[in-house]
Length: 210
Image: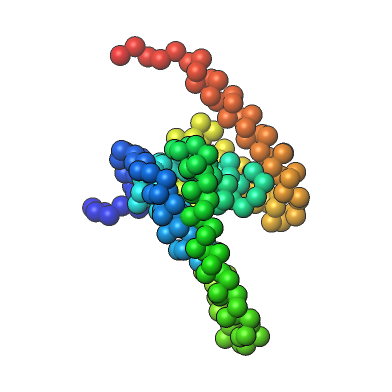
């Protein structure tokens, strides 16, 4: 018997546990500061691990939905996301606290690293390090995507349609080189329409008597 379980087991366990919430605006600021300082190479993986698995501020399904909204809004995904989370719990003050945590310490670190890296940027080992981190970032993003797939079980459009949408998006962006705005408007509209139909069908389906 597999005692540890795989991604599906971990996701279902995470869904069943009670949710927590940030205790204060200071908690928001410190949490997003700590999160941002870990975001070397792939912030998506860090955000998912910290807010879903460790802090339990949201379920995997909620994370997928909120991150999707953050992606389609203008601006950096993680900034949009932290504003949404902060605003959800403490309004405008919470959004600003989360934003400050996401930007303050990383900006200071970035300035120091930029000054230090400027003197060695042309060296072979520095170029190799940058290329190596690119591979790590790709691996982190892929691993996080696989871990979040079980959360689609509770999505009204279903795993099969979700897989078709993901495949269509990949083909449109990576292979056909369509502009992102057209992919969002085209495939995104189809996905939203299908989700609306499924939710309407569920709402109109009479529930079985206990």
